[in-house]
Image 1 (cartoon, rainbow, N blue to C red):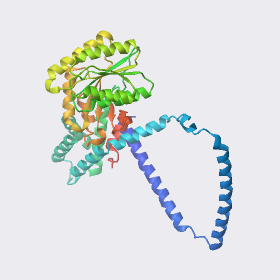
Image 2 (spheres, rainbow, N blue to C red):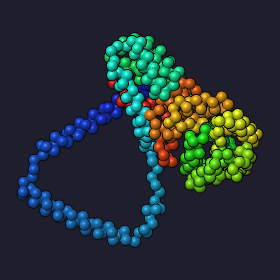
Image 3 (tube, rainbow, N blue to C red):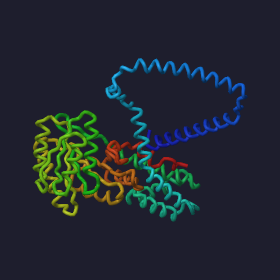
Image 4 (cartoon, rainbow, N blue to C red):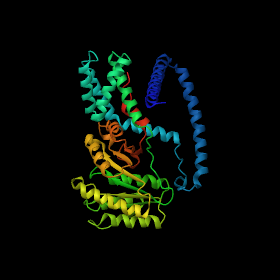
Length: 401
């Protein structure tokens, strides 16, 4: 089943559920209207019955209080919390994506409405306006042109003439292209077969790189992993202190040196500690000064050389952190880093605070690098594994007519 089929099925299921809820509400309203008021006699009988029942309940309650009087006050603290079921976790993820992409979905819907406001026919003027609309929605120039070209044939093929039909074809084609570009894409984190897994984080300053490391460290610590952080961003003022604060908050260890130290020296010490003390994961924070691109890339190459010398297949992941609120600027940053480093995956931060969720489509279409994690809120647990089904549903929900 393709992404569009999954999307349409979920969309229809939600519409049906909403219809059932509305029917239940209407039935309850009708029942309340038809309900005859009780006579005075019946009211008295009900009141008398309630008095007896309440008295019995109070007696039982007093007996229970007596039985429990000797129970330790700290018993509640000793109870093992019930672990949430996987089904609840899946539902929570789906809801989080839907809520997190609300701004992007709303803005894209508004742009489509504006496009169709003066709709007369599917002619060349319409396709030029559509192309502009897609570019404004941050799906990327290449994808906008590609999509518009394919839609010219698709609209004719499906004989779409009304506004709703044409809009449905647009949404379907966007999902299909996104689905096709994701063939063989792996969004999972690659772990080392043995020894510590090394994850190198890259990205420009200010995108939320250090915060992402802190959230991921917290996540893996809760999974029972032994986590070590390496503060290799030794040039940005406050970077070491910020990562150190996350280490304390998460309850994980950190390797750090004074500001202006050699980043590779930090990495060398950290990788030795990770190997010698049997850590499961080593997170390496790095500098992000694109204005000194040559120096920055040389530093990254040097750190990677140190890692590979100590652990031949390290780093196991190079995660590029991008701020989704910057739209096409984030795409340009990704292209620069991809040219000089072996980026294996992308973390998109602040996706819930932007109307530029279409950047995910552009990343897959132009870079063919998988988005592995997304930030859907400010809380520690709001960093979520990326799910293409949930993303597509969150971005296009309700836009099929």
